[in-house]
Image (tube, rainbow, N blue to C red):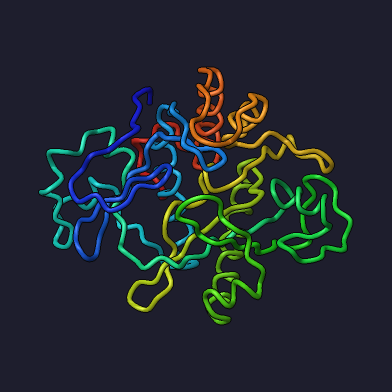
Amino acid sequence: MDSVLVKTNLPNHLYSGKVRDTYFINDKYMIMVSTDRISAFDVVMNEAVPGKGEILNSMSTFWLEKTKHIIPNHFVGNIDDVINTKDVDMNLFKNHISQDIKSRSMIVKKAKRLDIECIVRGYIAGSAWSEYKNNNTINDKLFEKKLSPAEKFDYPIFTPSTKAETGHDVPLSEKDGKNLVGHEMYNFLEKKSIEIYNFAHDLSKEKGMILVDSKFEFGILDDEVILIDELLTPDSSRYWDKDDYVVGKFPPAFDKQFLREWLLKSNWNLTYPPPKIPKKIINDTKKRYLESFKRLTNIENKSLEIGK
């Protein structure tokens, strides 16, 4: 897992985000490639984390398989599973897909994305803690119960945000969220997001991990709401080690916390261009991503079948 994939150049490029590159296969299907790029504070770093895309892709595959009983999702299969099947003609791509791309890619159904990020929080941390500490609110809603750092909520809370193409996502109040997607849709997304969170939280706890919070995205396919994008990865979720957890202090997270903390101490102004990232920070970040993957999935060798 020492190879690095920063850029991809397949035919039929559709969209590139901070981490993922998406390619058009036909009206039904797309290729979604998780690169090794890493971003912080909405800026993509010049350095990459070797193998990060493979971890993200494998972890999403694991969770998409595990949660499909809660809600359908966009996952069709990994490239080797579906290559040149009846509906997925990969001939256009066969000379462009290296092993590095293959191990970081999945075939997904094409859905119309709902422009709302569905965030569920089971514990107070991150931006929710900052808002609560400063204003006694969470997502602009007064929170009267006295909370300590890292404290578990009585029940998971739904704190959605806008899905920004550029710049920062903006938190959405319940009223604004319902105005954006409609009352019925908002309530459905909240219900399903919390169901997924609760299921993943319980499974993670069995593996000695705490799922603190996570972000989910949904789309519409054939008039049905489905789960899309990555799922429950260290990029979209905050995990803690159960053994490190004590109410009153925030444990180290299994994500890019090392990178964010280093950047905040580096006197960087949080705008492009970013500073050069030390190799130790890259290695420590990779180590945390890989550890979370192994612990949650019990998979040492990622060539093994995922999600069974």
